Length: 272
Image (cartoon, rainbow, N blue to C red; front, side, top):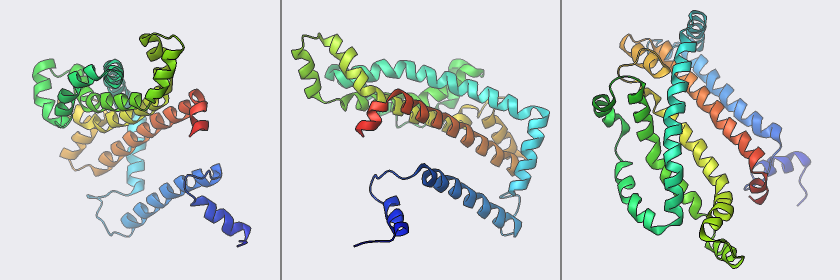
């Protein structure tokens, strides 16, 4: 059946895993965000929701300019980025070798997985009182909370990334005279690296979601601290601003990983 060009393009947009024009891809995302803010503006401007429950976009914008001008926003962003970076990097440095060992050796999988499966279901917020006793109330306590919230899922995802490398590839590598550690270094790790990179991107996003928990107690600066402080005084414009800033920073880091993925692993994109 011959369809007009416009209808063909519309059907192409909804084909399974089919490539679409970049303009259509980005227009869809930007358009959805624009609709979200438009609905928010309409709901608040028409008075359907009181400002104490949902401030208007203009009120949040004014709060943004206020914090930007007095330097509060920059101090909060700087402190939160520092805590997220240290907590996530510590988690990654430990999760990478353990996850790789678990993905390649059944002994290490049996050694670590039961304990990791046990701990990963424990809510990170429940560790706040203990981490204060263990590490005091400085940034070390916040690093621990971010570590707990990220590490246990991260190590299991890295293990699964390594396991996606076909065992047949390992067997073929032995026929070329490679030792066990050469196969691990020259075959398994390069093949698993694109998946591991994606795992790092996802777990960094999780670290951002634990920021408010990490800054829940004994903080005097940070986006999470600012949100919790505003809650006491029902300053919903400050709360919404903090949430939006965290979401924006998380989005920036997410796309930084996506763009670097395309630059580093072009062969993986062609294969998929």
